[in-house]
Length: 589
Image (cartoon, rainbow, N blue to C red; front, side):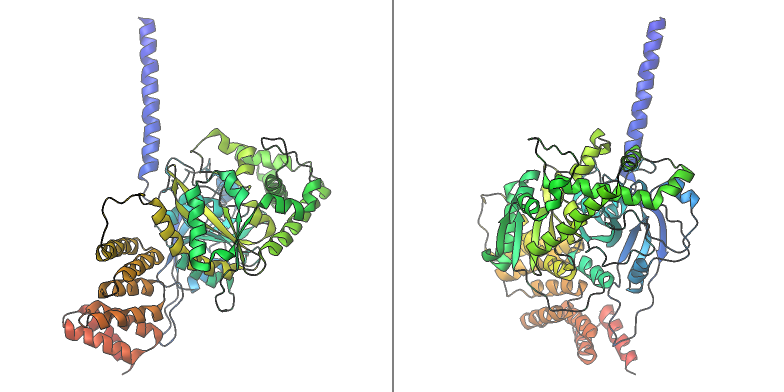
């Protein structure tokens, strides 16, 4: 009887434990913000300038910032509750956040980061790990986990993160969004908590390449220059072999490049061999490596050198606070900091020499008009709470590819490219240090083509029924409509363009593409498409309204009034036309 009673209590205990585990999982699944935010707030932009001045460049966009950016009146938490408790609210908003708000965007909150922004998995023992919308059972990636999740979940149009050793690029890849790391030193880090000053950059996430680019124009403050086409694309074959990327994904990139720029721009390179020959200090680097065949891997050595610099500089910046407060730290972080105790100045100088040589090597490889193509990460995001996530081996492996940009200081953008084995896959484009605008322009030019090639690769090889051009055009239009609803403006433009190529006599296709062009601020293209739609259908009210909007934004107020007036003739009760016409009339009374 006693044995039966004991067994009953054991079973009851296991049942309660199971309920608690399931409850925890359910809570994670139903969180409205996917656990991305640590604090909600609102910083509103200034009023719009009066016409004929152009509106603010980021008008209508909302954004969030990782909890390493100072915002006046709020404590910057640094992913650690002990840090929050020991620090006062910021007395000034950091310049990058202020610039974005002044540019017309609304800041809506602070997002979760890894403990003291040092991790790369996105798991934080002090706070619930943000849920990866692209793969809920997988880690979101860090350090800027919440910022990536906020964009992936469509809670904001863009977000800011900190990228030291992959803190923006890795979460972007894991969460299937765009992530940009600018050239080191090009965006101000004033008012941002330092992790490792020689590696840190402010990075940003978005789902739409036009939004990523608009944010870049505000933060980079680069002068206007004519867009340049890349003359060389270097495909790092060994890096793709390292990740066991399926051949169709590599072909998606190659076919897109060939379609846009021609086959002559392609060049294949074994990047490890190139780095080994151009970075001689790696030969004397004393960190012991092992990569299966017992030989040292140049990419792994770069990752090791980067982690040494990161841990050393972090300790220099924060050891006094850690020693005095004795905060509760993630065990992985504590282990990293202990490893730096025995480092000598000569060890650090050797790592810095490697960094200098690598920058020269990447600049020589890419020059002013080259793009390096690599996978964003060595493999799919690991499962949540997996043991390997807390090992040094995972840290080195995860940052092997991201060490290229971190150590060379060059710019990099992570680009989602579909799903492989139920996990997001991402590739990256890199340009030399200072090539930020060139890289953002290249992404803008390539993105639609990449998605088209991905769609083609994903289609069944054999079609059961051949469709007419008109039917195919209508299918493309519907895909464009769905992309438009999802606010994927560039993708919508691509689908509408496909529809127009298949059937150029349908006014709706031109009008819909004009609507997408309006969303990304391409007013000249929107006006041209509306004019074409009106030529095909003189009673297309939406085309008159959209052309009127485009002309108003271009400063052609008289012509805009004529378009709104004609829309009213066709639909006397159209409120949008009436309100737009009244607004313009009042401006010129």
